[in-house]
Image (cartoon, rainbow, N blue to C red):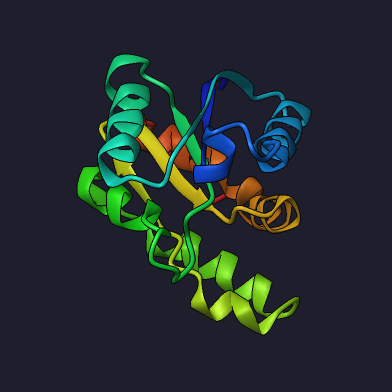
Length: 163
């Protein structure tokens, strides 16, 4: 199954041009290496209305099967990505976020304060990744093996899951 993806970098500094978007580039490289086309990319500030609008645009108007965000998943006052994501998804997929946190715990104890989440809006899978290039790359590697199957199921595949 071929599907299209979008990447949203959520960074106040990045949106003002004060920081390069290295994490977005890491995510795009990883997806393209898997044969996933990234057709949309944007950088926006850490503001709930802007994040919600971007997620809704990619899911509802662009009909992207996969939407990955990077940044804003921690506990600082401006880390608002999971809050905005929670407001736009129809259903949460807690196992994906749990798997990312679990794997990250072997790298850093700071992984336990990640508030990243994953969920479904319509026929789009939305996943929050950390803002650091290394964190984004490592967390994406954890969920990559399940992406294709998850997207197929979200889009109505009725075949059995067992192999």
